[in-house]
Image (cartoon, rainbow, N blue to C red; front, side):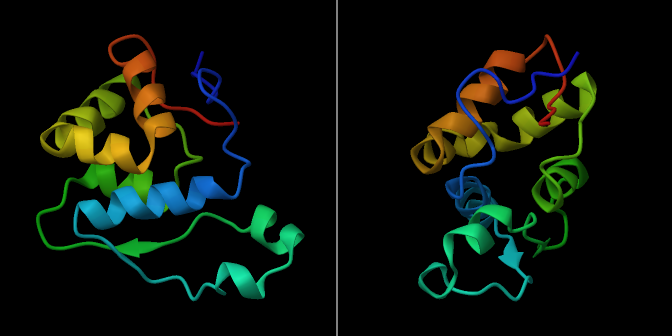
Length: 117
């Protein structure tokens, strides 16, 4: 059973993409999706936007890249642990960007894999 983003709220909120983007940029990723600015979107477009896509510097952890480019894809328990370990050096900075995502990772650490439905 995946954690289903159940511990802290819903990934359907428009801020979810913004929070993932902030964490990705913290680790050197660059958005490659041609995204309309929020102020140019109506609420439906903003809510329904697919996950954003990113490019990364050479040497970036593969599980982190997988997660960043499709946070709705499930990760195994092992992959989730690898994601957490990669992020640990900047954990507090990531928490400042998205305490919800970090809280979710803390809840599943060692118990489950990342999974959003």
